[in-house]
Image 1 (cartoon, rainbow, N blue to C red):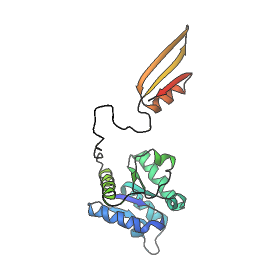
Image 2 (image 1 turned 90 degrees about the vertical axis):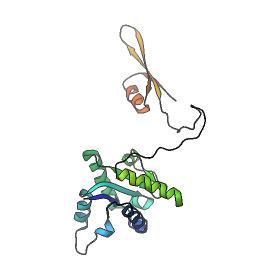
Image 3 (image 1 turned 60 degrees about the horizontal axis):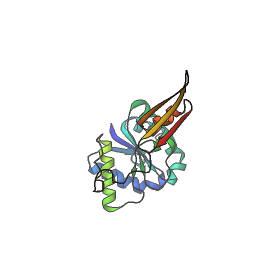
Image 4 (image 1 turned 30 degrees about the vertical axis):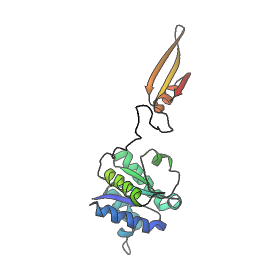
Length: 195
């Protein structure tokens, strides 16, 4: 069994060779279409066996891969295995593209605009993920608590739901995740404030 199957558009074979070499340098085993190709062998059967025989799946996202039918088939298979079997699927951006909906739900590794030391850090993230390890903590800006930079997405929401029974009662739920707040809000009249 290999550590990872890598799916990519044929235009990026040089990129996948570089990545595969670096992953092998880290002691990981990888499979990808070019190294699996055998004259006369069935492409579908070969790729299916490689995906089934890999612990994890990596897909290189680019404009070319998003429009490639073979990559699309591999994406569907890798996502299904991730959802049904709990195998890790890791989107890797090599160009600045919008990820498909299910891939966007995964943490990804972004190589799209990096080189040198930044590329080495991103490679280390990918290696840790393929080994099933947690990412290294990112050092935040120094300063007193509450003054650091935060993401543009809400971290906490207040949800107020109006419930009618023998009059009008209000229930307030604080400190819940934004998606949970939206799920509750879908149940009836409500007010959401995210911070």
